[in-house]
Image: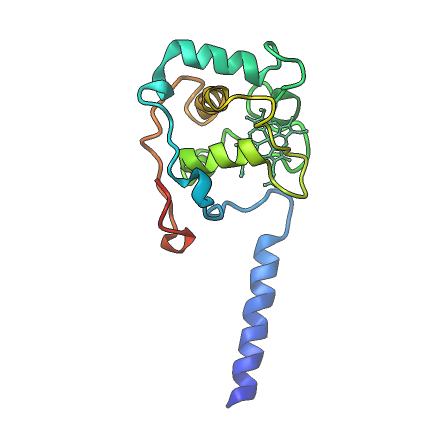
Amino acid sequence: MKKSAAVLGMMGLVGFITACGGGESPIMAPPPVPAEYADKHMPAGWWTDQKIFEEGRELFEGKKDIDVNCASCHGMDGKPKKRGARDFRVAERMKLYSDSYMLWRVSEGVPKTKMKAWKSKLSEEDRWKVIAYIHKFSHGGNPAPHDDYAPSSPSSGGAGG
Ligand code: HEC
């Protein structure tokens, strides 16, 4: 019965689209990290280093370089100011992101969105600092190790880390 299978497939698709509609973007496993970034990781100890955290804050808030003002879109408190920017306070989402994934996104940006590539403005060290800082939004405002990292989907690529 090919026909009924096709109909079932259509219904499934409609259900899927409906579930993904609506305002807040759904929490999904992020795309696989390109090889260039997959092996890069937060320097040891930086997630919880108070000095790194403070430098990350200055970068994030545009205090160090006015051209780098993450907070103008992502919000001083991690609550997005610009439509489409992710809510960094949602731990359910942030725990799906590896350190490599975040470095990739901050370095290269997200195509077709307002998130641009920052690698020309921020050294790799500075990118790690700002990542260590934004992690606080899903951890009660405090520096915290990213030991809650838990990629949900095995299909999202093996190079997670
Ligand atoms: C002009 C607005 C804007 C600025 C400035 C900006 N972002 Fe973004 N950012 C966005 C948007 C919009 C997205 C969501 C892109 C998408 O749809 O996946 C995003 C996504 C991200 C992501 C990936 C989240 C995810 O769900 O994949 C990270 C990490 C991030 N931004 C960090 C930063 C950092 C760090 C800075 C400063 C160096 C910064 N952003 C500056 C708008 C901005």
